[in-house]
Length: 317
Image 1 (spheres, one colour):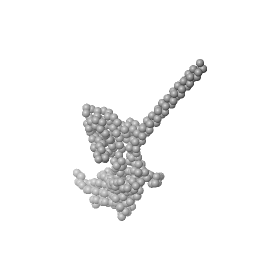
Image 2: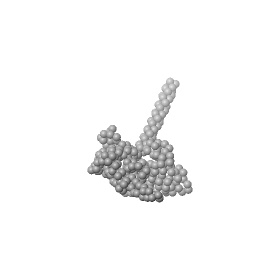
Image 3: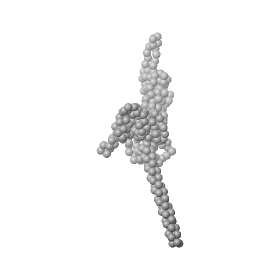
Image 4: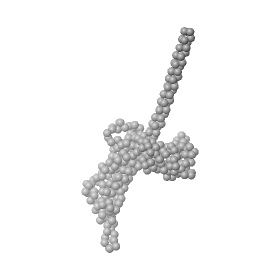
């Protein structure tokens, strides 16, 4: 009897041990599964973040090519306004050099995927590949005045004055890590108006503002935002009217942003894309989702989505 009880006790102990082992194994498998899924999720999030990662951009040397003509503020404006009587005047307004430099900084720092290095960091701290250093050559800061005289219906002499400001510069963009020149874009801004401008100063400052915007626009196209269509929303017959994309507030999406829709192909190991449509972000609905209106190519976009074709969405402004 004692031997039987010992056998039963041993059997129950083995059974409990086996259950513990199985339970431990199940928990271990569940833990590994959770870690794996978490790693996959983090990996996907990292991939999406890296897709639209931001870079540093620093303004290096700034040179001026028109230093042969130095005018005081009064002389510059005075010389422009003398053209009201003589017809036309061109003036190199060098007093605006600092304003143009600040406009370059504003243009660099206003782009979606670049963060301007304001001098708080040394270049040695921002030499990761993809960061840029911009050297600038300001080639033109000019105020033009063109006036004409004419007779009104009463025979009185009237003067109409047109003011035009022009700002031009070339940027040389270099990779901060390698020093390689990656682009050398030229920018121009002009401000124009009739007598309502009141003086050439306003025309030049308008030109400076537009010049700054040109830099931002160029950088946005040089390094655009990318996304994918994650779901087709509203459709009518054979045309797609709305879609959802995986781009939201965390990556710089904004209402009104225009996006091109491209079919992606691989040719000889290289990526080739063909634009089939255009989207406009109507509503940013979260960190990583926006609803877009299809502005063109609705038929081709719907056909591609129905066929499971690989599509890429890229900002175009």
